[in-house]
Amino acid sequence: MRNVIMISTDQQKADAMGCADPSYYTPNLDNLADRSVRFTGAISTSAQCSPSRASWMTGKFPHQVGVYQIGHVLDPQEWGIAKEFNRAGYETVYFGKWHLGLSPADHEFQVTDYRTDGLDLAGANPDSRFHSHKDAVTTTQALNYLDDYDGSKRFFMKLCWYMPHPNTPVRSQPFELIERFAQQFPPEDMPVPDSFYKDDLSGKPPFQRERSSSAESDLTEEIVRSDARKYRSMLVLMDTYLGRLMEKLEEKNMLEDTVILFTSDHGDMQGAHRLRLKGVLPYKELYNVPLILYIPGAEPIRKVIPDLVSTAAVTGTLLDAAGIPVPKECEGGSLLPVLDRSAPPADEHVFFEHYKAYWGRHPMIGIQTPEWKYVYYLEDDLEEMYDLRNDPDEIVNAADRPEAEEARIRLRRTVEQWWTSTGALTRPAIEDHESEWIKKFN
Image (tube, rainbow, N blue to C red; front, side):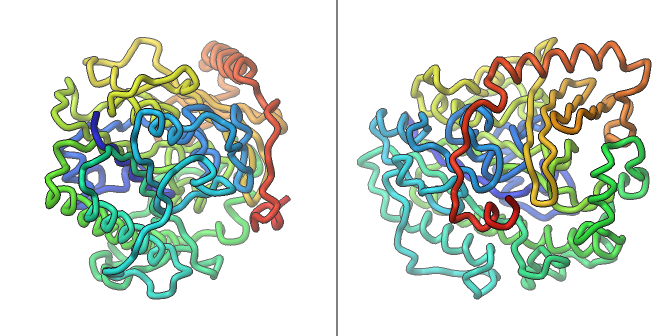
């Protein structure tokens, strides 16, 4: 049995790392990826914080556990990953962002706070309300825990950073600029996505165009480049903290006995399709997330795996990598069998869902295959569909095109069957009435 650390960021796109896109600077994450397996086809169960995190805890899709949106509480009676590690004799540790109502302790994590002496902001905002500062505190807690670790008991640690999620109080300037790293990213060098120019959102659900021209999502090239610069600066700071964590594991001679899984709950539009931040949108910028798995001594057939996999498998993968049998409650399964295959299965596909954003309620269910992405909006009775082989940037909605009709019918049938067989919207949500999101947007 091994120690296990799950590291997560918030709102990090799959390609937001130097080894995937050289406009980013993440040397420590790149080094971790180099010694690990990188899944480039990882799809989030939901492109919103709380629902996605509910999947990490339970190995199920958000609708199965009644966490449809931010402000919904994950039922502490639900089976959860900490409970399984506890049963196996592990010490379970949680530091950082939670976002599931109640607390990690209510879900049986044993250690949820730790000393913060030696705090080094490393460029983070000194104001404790900012995400960069919170991540500095979280990192210090983790480093001190590891420093004190004496090896007497295996541990499972969840280390959940906030960055690069925005949190500045000015809605038109949502991202932090980490001044220490700002010079690495001249505004004029920042990229603008091709779909910013190519997609006028015609043929898409009308609320997407409405969103693209309203409030903070009314974009210009200057805004997109400014967001890109800040986003990258936050990821450099995150990477700095990751480097410190890896150094501590090396210093303690723990790296060869510790599983590490790195991922993010969802991505960020970053100006793609003339859209900003996130919401009830199906695009790859939101759903394709980083997923890096380091298992000491593993010899996978492929180091970079493009197979479509769901983040519902994170839970079972962590247990499986520790040598703990994956229980039936953990329906997402494990990614370890994927390491032993040389090619994806012939019928590979993955499901995803979304319920409500702060700017609109448009519940949707979706399915992605190597060839197609299909989305059905349950209340709007609208369809979206993309030919991923010929239109990888998802510019043209092919849902009403004759050449896509056979695939459209098949995919709609498949996703609806999955949706109904897994309970649809029958699981009642528990609302966190103290949630500012619930108060403001319900």
